Image (cartoon, rainbow, N blue to C red; front, side):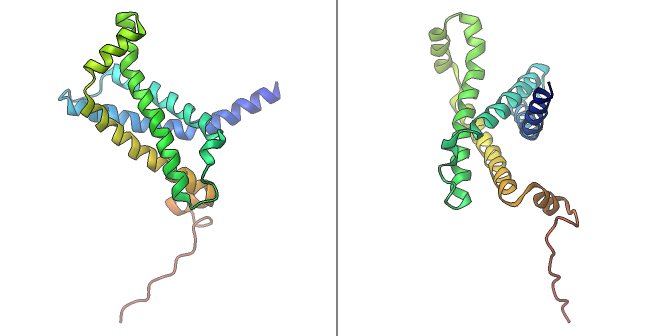
Length: 178
């Protein structure tokens, strides 16, 4: 029983930061999508979809982070790994965005192929790509922060960003102009 509780606690601690991050990202995206469509505000359905999307994407990212192919560039400068992970997560994100549009059509037409045909015919590609570009930027920021935490340690990064005196590096004072 203790092993199960320890495992659940470990999983909870691992999934919490990306879930919070993507909850914010997906709600901002849903809000801006609503503004672009001139329906000022966030609907409960849009908010629920953003929440579910954040939970799914956060867990998918945690599962994929354990795959060895994501560390292809571990011996190279950090930027290679960051860009590689952003690309992989971006592909997963685009698959999720397409699934988000496809699932309601599947329920409507009760056929996967018919739903796919309608999806390809009805999707507004400029809107899809605009949303995907925004998602890629958020994923890039996420990957940068995660890699910095991995390399520098959570305490040091927290100290640098939040100014914790014990963790932040000592800063040299600029000489006063005379």
